[in-house]
Length: 222
Image (spheres, helix red, strand yellow):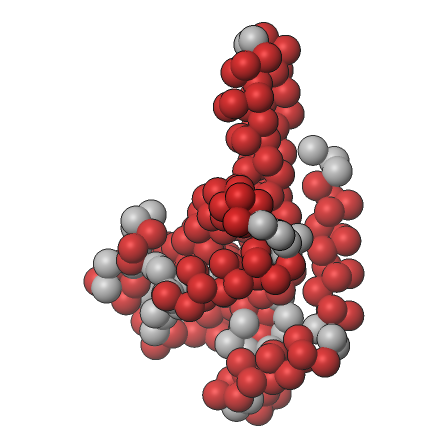
């Protein structure tokens, strides 16, 4: 992959990755706020300003490294987690699960919006405007929206791995009976290490890829 290809992939990937992870975290904080926890709002995290959500490694370095090493075929990233205090919830166990589920749900909705924009805006516009507009404006927009679908589907599926502190783990804690939920939540301090091991060994693919396939099948309805 030469330098021009890298720049092209960065331009195509940067916008959808940034939007995906910012709205993922924003949705956690917004839902938590609606359920009674003002922590994210008080810390200035209920904003679409990406500066408030950027993590230097997860938002910038990791996506760039993946673009270079995978040729833009696999791009992933994350933002700074939105702070949530479950003690502010009326039903901490249930409401924490709802707040956690908001992230993947938002990413799935973003993928649907991207499909709708392609189908009802970009494609019709390509038949109306001159070829020069299509090649210089509409073609890049199409690629960005196409990458948005991929990024949001992968981000939603990855975050549903049932290991806390990933969203899937926190949803599972909310669904388990109280005693089992307390026991399972104790692995959260080691959660990221467990996830890294699952990724390194390829075991994570056995969970993520079926979800990616399932989400992709659902998206075909749109």
